[in-house]
Image 1 (cartoon, one colour):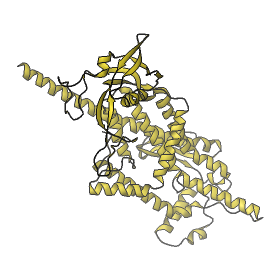
Image 2 (cartoon, one colour):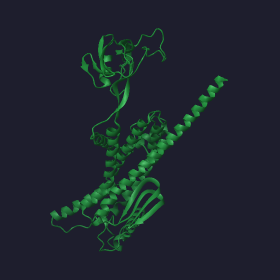
Image 3 (cartoon, rainbow, N blue to C red):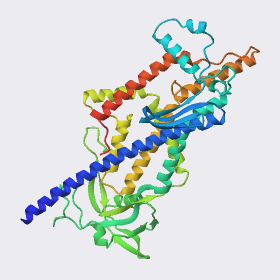
Length: 459
């Protein structure tokens, strides 16, 4: 009866734990979606504020795509939230100069792309009130147009810096401290295949020396130490050698004498990968083992560490963005052939949601899970910052490139004494924009399918 009751309790506990993990996973996904929506909203505010500051008429400010869930008009601008929180936009008057004349439109000729150009011009002309209206985007000086289009990506960069700063300076980096968490009773051979001590196992040197949980190691063989890595390296380098270790216990210093036992272990490189010889056999080395487990704590970083991490992430993401089509192709091939994906490859929003769910449901302290979600959201904002600066329409970088080209043309005309040229008509680039949009849709579809069929996992 007792055994059956205990078994039932274990099964019930297992089911309860499974339900808790499912709920935690869903919470992680929801938090990521909310965080992404906030990031998009701030991105669009980065466009909205300078646009209004420079007098441009803004018809809409929308977060999301699809059907409108809520909207309210304040002044001349309609603010709203749409059903799919995976993007956003503001509608500015006169993003492009109006069509010169009906005959100019007629010269576009027939065909699919020509029709697209004419439709884009017609949609743009609807935002214009009259020829004397100067509250339009295309009439702004070049630097103001650049500021408006840069505002969105810069907001994502600033948000990433804030999140990284909270992560590094508010929470800290998880590091091994010099405080002893526990002391092993014995030294179990690596190939023993067990975790319990046997009579034949030697007593752990740390236990023999009198180490206790809570001891803070402050010096090894007369050399002060500040990290557990220094302690660990000294112990590994001293197999069968006598060591004097000074610990701080209850405010008093004690010197403990210990002789690490010699153990043969696998050799790993700086990246944590096993080192193998030319013939493929794993390399081993004799190292000292003491039987100490260190406490792990959060070490807060300087206030500038967040900005530094953001800069490092920008460089890393930029290295992926410029070769994104190749990376997506490799991801698709890995999914079709059943191979493992590159852990440093691109993700879709679905993949990021899966990782967020895994972080939230992980068997770890709450603070660790919060840190993981902050890191993921900050990295997504870095990706938004870099991706939107790609100089292709309809991305912000494409509008910046058009504005700069317009400025170059005007400057060259001024230097050569020629009349000021007409504003650059970006509607002529609609065919290129169409190709870019189709490419983005295809790459997104490949990544979403891969994240569903062959997902990356933290565990």
